[in-house]
Image (cartoon, rainbow, N blue to C red):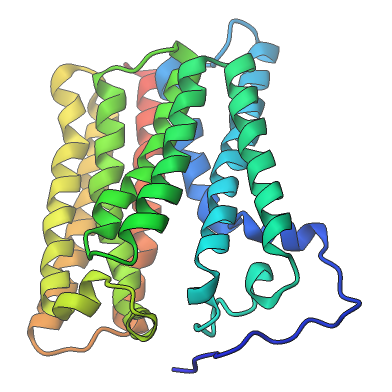
Length: 313
């Protein structure tokens, strides 16, 4: 592994562009968060989210832009707080905050502006509860995960991963102004899915985490326990995913989709467990299928929930 010990110097005349500021928001990470937000909008509305087409389109636009701004703001503050770590890893050493292209002050102002704009937009044009749920996700990611847990305990992703569970609550609250049991299950599904997804990545790049002293589970307890924990959380995720059927929140379309999607998630988790227990060393070839499928799993599961609620529930 190549470790960068110093950022590449930025030429004195170099100026940050809008693309550099966009990169601070971690757009690739946000895409799945926005998907769970928007599918939750349709689940809550059980159809088009508005009395008219225009009203529904306006709601979706506000939720999309405000949701991106809030999650993007969390990404900005994460890069500010983690710039010392990013400096030491080759894959992150060229981030704008680390290379010096964007100053800490400029990044702070940008991140704060995004968060304020998001909160105000959700409060004014959707519901106050949606604004508070969005802010809660931001604070969980920045304060609980980045500032507190990430560098202190291997439970960081389990507890701090709750930040990624708030987007569907934002989408739900934007439509209804409240939360119910089904919305709670959407939160819980993502909560138990997150370790499966993130530990698959952590096993691939554990040497980098070890190099900078981040106590991710595979660094602290090794591959075997991590593989076992991935399997356990995959079981939790699949069980939770089918439970909404039993109180009538969704019907057969979602149920069979959840079973099929969950079955493959369990199979990939089991394959990883067997490989590691037989002495195999996790690498990109072995870990990538589970890591990539875990994202597809969540996207398709939430799509199935939205289609089921719109057409059948």
